[in-house]
Length: 556
Image 1 (cartoon, rainbow, N blue to C red):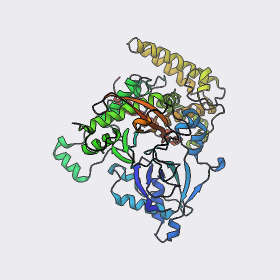
Image 2 (cartoon, one colour):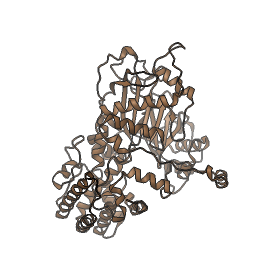
Image 3 (spheres, helix red, strand yellow):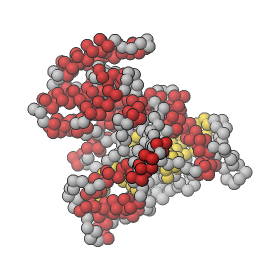
Image 4 (tube, rainbow, N blue to C red):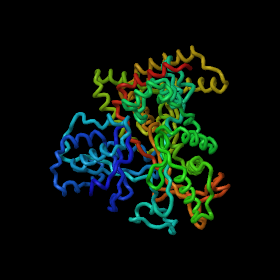
């Protein structure tokens, strides 16, 4: 173990990702995911006096049920059975010495790679004892591709268990944040928030960002000089451009709509679309390759060697993105990941507004203790029932909703009445929308009132059950997934098409129609993997009312 073999790769709101560049087969083709708060704490407690041997000591924590982290348990018991075991690789826990984490912390800050908007999350806050080491997560690096056993002509990498030699073939990886693929139809939506019935949550959030009511951590913050310059020249201000992307297009089982969704994402990437080539990011909100880089990648894809076979393109950047979106859309059409994600997202039948009301009821039943309510919810999130069925779909009626949910529904008359009322409301709403007319406001108000009455009479177990499913849906609305792929040599097209399995990726024949590939069918070896699917902590419910209140600024 050598901390200098790990370099900063990316980050989210809570965690930082470090990519391995050494030659140890145990770590090759992997990334480390570490909480930024843990790195900061380790840095504050470490005086740099550790020996060289302590810097090079780490311990992989073997998986045992009794010592598993909440994320490991959630992935194994809840997500894998419903999403599909082949789409989620279970992570390994690793314990790092504080000195290693301090090194990663200081080297990352010194690198200048942290987006300015993310710097506040690296500040040292409440410290905790890190003398026993810091827990991190060891994950597969999905910007690379595992070998397929049937493609024996491909060169081996350092280890037969890991990635193809990236120097001999181009591997493209696309990270997508799909967002919520449904429009809420819950009668618990507050009357002033009924814009939610007409548009996706993503579309509404885009408008709120444009209006300045919502800020996102991925957006670059201006320095003092830049702010001054923007003030002096209003034309230079950082104007937010809403995306045309609709999650409904991506999740709809139609390849034309899938391609449209991916094209819309690629034209306004924000934090929802990123592309890597052989492990190096080339496209993102603040990352764009030069034309000659795109031309070289296209030449490699077409296996052009020398100048004779090369086709010089007027806009290689757009052509490369077109090739990528066409390939990815055809891969997604073959796999069941999106439909499985959508089934889990649709377990939300109460909306964020309803979650606030149910949470208030649960706190009341816990004698006013938020801590007790959240403890119950966090524990319940990991307690899946037996016999989960892959992609079983969500049904709202009390008779079938219990079969759709991974959690056990306890008997409660008010819960059954609530679910039945939701079904009747959805039927009315769906009928009116199909007719092209607005729903009857009096019916909406009456249904909302009846649902509030049901919520105020729910048992503790019923509250937990509804919030379990809402938090699970929230987690699946916030996931990312990678589609990593490589185009095959002509002689490798003969391999029979097959979908991805737990043992290896899939093989597809993709139809490509563009300037460089000219209506050409090409073999593609691919893998689709979901990431960032940790359980949402119950404390998310604390400020949920404020989050949902922003929708009052949008007209129906």
